[in-house]
Length: 301
Ligand SMILES: [Zn+2]
Image 1 (cartoon, protein in one colour):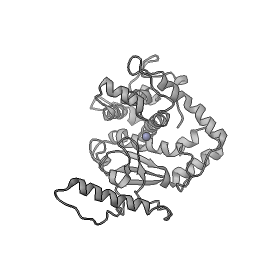
Image 2: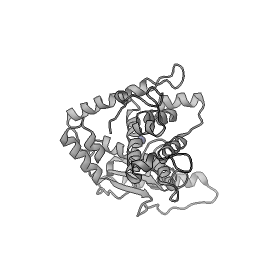
Image 3: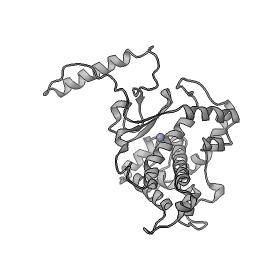
Image 4: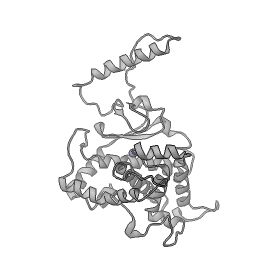
C-alpha cells in the first residue's frame, strides 16, 4: 500500500482504487480449501490414451457448464497461462510458481512453491524474502498493474485515460533499460513486450527488500555478522542463485523472441542495479556497473 501511495505519477483517485483492490485481493496459498470435482469415469490400468481422453471429456463438459453460474472468488478453477502452458490453477499445484488471477482478484502461490530451496520455514528470513517474498511481491505488482479489473474481479476500468498515459510514461524507463541490453551480439530485447514482467520484477524485488528491512531493522539488515556477510548481502545472493539458469545461446534467443519474461541474467542484474539497497549492501562505488546513478534508476512501483 505504501508503494501505491508513493506512485505519484498515478492520480489520487487511481491510487485509491488500486489500494482498495490490493486490500481486497485474496491470498491463495498452497492448495484450495475445496478441491474441484474430478468426476467419476472408468480408468483402465493399461489404456493411457483412453484415460486421458476420458479425463479431458469430463473437464471439457464441466467447463462448458460453468458460464452463467455465479462467480466464486474462492475457486481455484481459473485458467492460467504464464510459462508452463495453460491449465486449471488447481491442477498446477505441482508447478512451483506464483501467479495472479485477475478474474478473482487473487494471488496464488502453489503448494510446490512452499518447499525448499524456494521456501524453508527454518531458514533465515532474508533467504525466504529473496525467493518466496520477491515472487509474492512480483505477483502483487501484476495485481496493481491490471487496472482493467476491479476489486471483485469483474471487468472494470480503475484508471482514467490520464492515469494510463502516466503509467506508460513512468514505465518508459523500464522499457528503455531492456531495449538497451543486448544478451547476445545482434540480439535485441523486446522492452515493450516484456514490460509487464520486467516492471513486476523491479517492483517485486524492491518490495521484498523493503519488507525485510522493516522486519530486521536497517542496522541489522546491513550489519556484517560472524558469517562474514550481512543479511542484505545474503538476500541478494539468494535472489541471484534462485534465478540462476544454465542456458544455451539458442535457448536464450528463443526466450528473447517468445517469452514474456526477460532472460534470467536480466531478471537479476536489472532490478538489482536499480536498487539503492544493493549498492549500499556491497558498498558499490559511484560508476560501478551494478549501481546505476540515482537519475537513471527506474521506479514505477
Ligand atoms: Zn509475472
